Image (tube, each protein chain N blue to C red):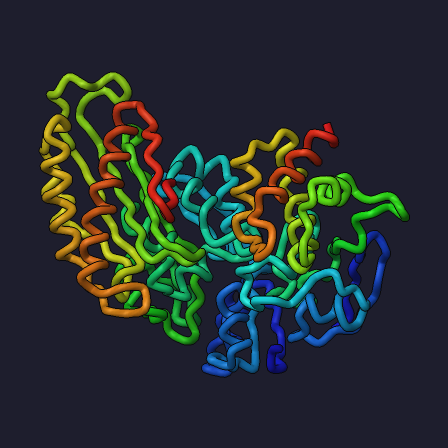
Length: 153
Length: 308
């Protein structure tokens, strides 16, 4: 099936099988390796991408569902050399250790910020509840998201 | 990895039912895929045809009347954010807010959740207390049946292979009903869920006169048995009880609820432990509902529990 998708701002016409998962299309066909396959069951958040601004697990999302929609991966966050405020906040807060969960955390946080311009700590915790990190203990991630929200205002 | 399949995208319910009837067990109805695709990845289900129901009119709406009807393809997120649901069944909005995680809520649907009949379904447990019924369409016509009859066992419903779940209908509680949903679990999937609702004969928010009585009560328990269950005997025990005597009534109702579930020993705990926890959480949920009935929002937080 041919799908028309805007990936990180760039329109693409892609030929995909009905059973192709969005994660595989992004990683293998488009060479965008930011979204990771980890739990493969929508529990961990490492494969999170935004489809029309909504966070989804690309590991369990048919690529054909993205037809006519726009997909944002972590590769589309920065503008050239300048980091997205969330990325900068993660760097500043030391919210990255092994980095495996980071792209999912960033995109989930971006979706959260588009719904809450003044998020509370509880808003952040609620939204990130389904994003697992085995290194940081979450504290610095939450701090980074709150700091980025502050910067954005 | 998924095995190859053909994706059908019917635009009418008739077309979808005809596809399901014609393809039989080779086909599966598909909406969000948050349950179906996982089982397909594992090879537990191997449908060669998926029938996408999201493009069918009437499957994605929420409509109000004497009852509240929710289309099968409405996502958890849409349920959470619907002003109509918030006004008519506020506990449904807040429970929807805590289903799985935000990614599943953005994609997963109400109909998929119910048709999957996972004993751990938050919505099924809650909907039992709202006297839910489901609407099924097939080439033979339309039928409506109580949610309780629809869910026959773990991952088993009375839906025929050519039937399509179109909507679920709730009977909203009276406006002065106070309610609480409490779920417990170390992981995302809850290991115990309790839905309770209380209606008092006094004026909500000013009570405390000791003369208030419980005129209606609802209790359903999910996760611990093969299906979520509503426990009429526990509800009956609460009716007529004075709110001043809530602790005794709640204790008795909780014990009845614990006796009314059918837990099994498994990796989540022994059957005895689960029964004990049912009693504990029914009491906790009733206390929260009673506090809310009097206009208070208790700050009680229990380890590994979500209060909606």
